[in-house]
Image (cartoon, rainbow, N blue to C red):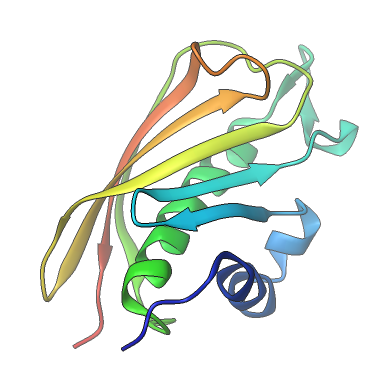
Length: 138
């Protein structure tokens, strides 16, 4: 299987998962180091208390993991999340939310990933730390 570009991965995710359009998911960078994914800030994503909702943060992290897997392996649309662990660390700022995903270990059956989630302009303070596993189709 051949690797995909950031633009191809973004289109593949948005076409296969309409919710990605709802949050305006963007794949800004995809290279040998990993993926940088982004959800632009929008008031519809804010929960009571003025913070971005947990489901938005989790969706971004999960999409970033999927993107890094697609970027490495190519069109494996049937790769699925088999585990996602998230630690919410600080309240995100009312700006774009960014996620940097990398693959920690890749085998024939699974990809173990790590994601750092942070607010645009505040890259030194993690909003959330995420680890997850994608089960890969045989």
